[in-house]
Image 1: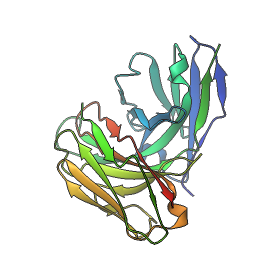
Image 2: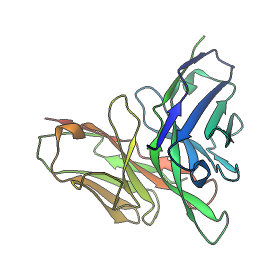
Image 3: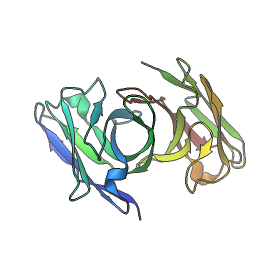
Image 4: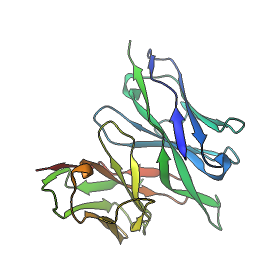
Length: 128
Length: 110
């Protein structure tokens, strides 16, 4: 069945980096994007960005731009999200999700319109 | 940036009740609007995409409507397993292809 399996919980010090993995199975990896969403304790959902698994193009939310890098390894159908210079307000559950794409006739020639399969979430705690 | 609001922020209803949640966008987003369900301690689940299309395997008691700036999400007959927080989410077709979530509506059983 289609699923995304994420890496385990992390505890980091302020200023450190964290890299979360998301392994896909049950579908053709490069036919869909991977998005990342986080949820701080007791809060709502916050979109962090996309990676196009076919051409590795990325789109990041302004709030994390400059601190986040999203990558993929197509040989293992795995996506990664690295967040640097961690702060206490980065404490959250981080989710990866499969992005449904639609082609359009103008730049950027595609867009994502939904996240239809989600990973189980990875808890990242930033604490001194 | 487009801002999303939802109302109410929480509600209590009885099993079998019809429940409606509204979502409003700060500008016209056509039908670029999805609804997700998140149960406590679980990942979100896509219920409705493009304002009114039912996701794969989603029960028909869930429905969505609207376009432009005003949208509604309805559960026609609330079931105990529908206890969850529901989020609307809009998407952009231009870079950075942003997704913006509403603040959520928590639904529980009276």
